[in-house]
Length: 122
Length: 107
Image 1 (cartoon, rainbow over the protein chains, first blue to last red):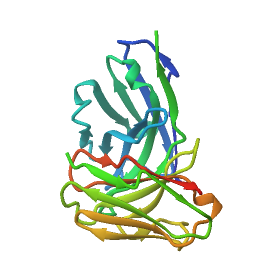
Image 2 (cartoon, each protein chain N blue to C red; image 1 turned 180 degrees about the horizontal axis):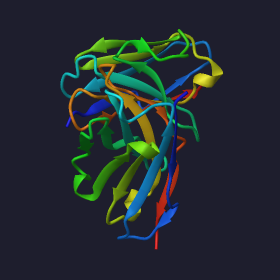
Image 3 (tube, chains in turn brown, blue; image 1 turned 90 degrees about the vertical axis):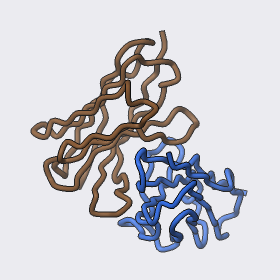
Image 4 (cartoon, rainbow over the protein chains, first blue to last red; image 1 turned 180 degrees about the vertical axis):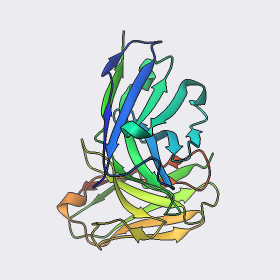
């Protein structure tokens, strides 16, 4: 059974850097085809993809946020870390991590973590 | 960036009725499209991958169709637990993109 769980601060101040950790079980990020992605959802709004890292350390970012995002993996700890710099109140959202696999053409996100709500406020 | 446009924004139906949700891509995504369901306060759940394949454990009343730029998610007969928001997502081109969602509400 695959599970993922996000952890990190619930409140950050504007201009601060957000660091979120996704801790997972039931799969290995050293297995060919496996990836972990980050997706966020502002309150009452749609889903927005942020970043994705693959087993081979290939990293992909949303172009609109690329300058602010860094995604890394620690295979030995079964963790993926997302950092986002220069946080702003518009970044207030629930942040999800999710498993992805290239065995399917559409490489869907399945399953998802429970999500963590991050509020940006002074 | 590929834009996914979902319609309608809101669908008001009664239990037992058929729901037809549309997702249109700004350029071809072949079959690289997935559908998710999100209930209030819950995590998104994968329903359909590769445009027409049901994910594990998804009831047969959910079906997906389409390829290229036009896709449809059909719920053949709405159950009370199906009232939720549905999102499509493409993986054809980077960046990955989601549609803005269709809310299926009880009429």
